[in-house]
Length: 318
Image (tube, helix red, strand yellow):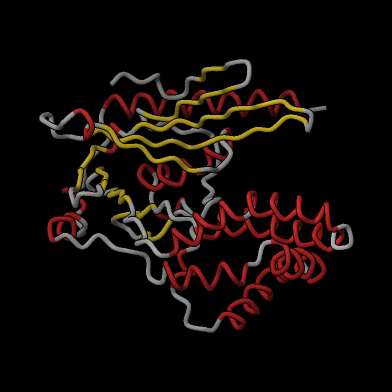
């Protein structure tokens, strides 16, 4: 399957697609795990999960708060209250149903990026595992906009694709893709850079929040520790306003902590004997190397980014 070259962009009237790989060249963005998709990280491999229970709660809970407040305002008018109840059941009830349903399903296995072998392990639903060359992975940031009476709305994804290495695979088992609801554009590039920078630079290039999977303290004690850490960075006023009021009442971070402890403590692991062996560290002399094509593409892209940074600096000078 042919794909546009990495670094190219296709624009439409209400859409934009930024193609990031193959080959996985730098995007110019700083790695940022905006969706907390990094589940494990060490010197050998990076586990990426697509079970973001926290994001689901952060989207749903503000609607619960908003509709509860609106219900309080409509409590006197019984006719409007009936209409409001039906609207609330539809807007909140449907996503809440899928959220609850997802809580009682097994957490999907992560995809594992092995930087020493420069390969990716992709678990499939039938118990099969694909071992895909890193440089064959496709990635694109897609963004779509719509205009209504309420204004312009923009939505986007980071889409990562994998090809089955088995040449005899059936047509419905040749391709697999993952989509991450991160808004597209530069945010999607920053999320992709978590994987790209890990594979091409190293673990130190990517910050992660995997410490949240090892909660030795209770929920309130952990929340207090997070407040103290945030206060050291931003001061107590901003911390109480954001992590305190908004964190509890608007986004319900305590509920997120409860659900993550239930479903992701610890995250699921790849336990097939062949994958356990594949995940073991190799002597440095046995590490896989970049292809000459990728070396040339990265060098060209880094030169382009350096030229762009230099030109921006000159334009900003008084």
